[in-house]
Amino acid sequence: MSGQVETATMPNRRGSLTLTVGLVLVGLHVAVALLTLMWTPYDPTGMSGGRLEAPSLAHWAGTDRLGRDLFTQIMIGSRIALIVGFGAVAIAATIGVTLGVLSAFATRYLDDILAAAFDILIAFPTLLLAMLVVAATESASLFSATLALGIAISAIVARLTRILAKRILSMDYITAARTAGASWPSIVFRHLLPNIWPMLAVNFALQFGLAVIAEASLSYLGLGAPPPNASWGRLLQEAQGTVYTAPFGAIAPGIALVTLVIGMNLLADGLRDAGDPTRRGRQ
Image (cartoon, rainbow, N blue to C red; front, side):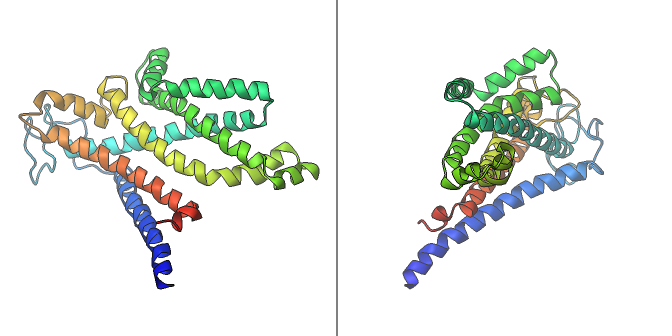
């Protein structure tokens, strides 16, 4: 009996630890982003030291090729990454959940068309689809990058929502509710969305990490937030020419990017373990 208890509790502890570490990493970036609204060590656009200085007490991450404090730039980058991540996920959730629910309720012919459209959009690389959307807006900005990533991710959300919704709609209690005269909006908001929301929340956390990486890639290519916005991708692009003489200019924003993405992935794993009792009881 004691062996069974230990087997059941160890996955719980591991899932709790994963969730805790994810919350700490993401919470740290959120705290830094909120702090930049009130204070930064130096003026983000001002030259506060010499060019390409090494990390020191005055400049914790050194300075860039223009003499700007790199730690300040990375702090601003946290804010931009979170804005893009949350904005893209919000857009993807609005579009994807709506289309996914509509597809689940649609006729078989329309459902097949929407399902095929979702699969075609998912087949396109997210970054490539985002680049096409940014090019269509004819201007590289923080808003266009967020909109592009939200639209690109929405197909993934829509496909998952459709699958989950069709599974819930086949349940007996949904049939009973429809027989009792419940309206479609009542079924959606009282039965459907509350039951699929936990799985969607896990997917949103994963897509957040994808959006952050894609935004950094867009900024690296010059299609993201333009200067003076200190996107991590733009910092990496600016540091590539001095990576051998001043490597910390590329290492520091890379560490910031990796910790946020890992934090969101751990948060997603923790949410999945917390919301799935079969995983909690499995070795």
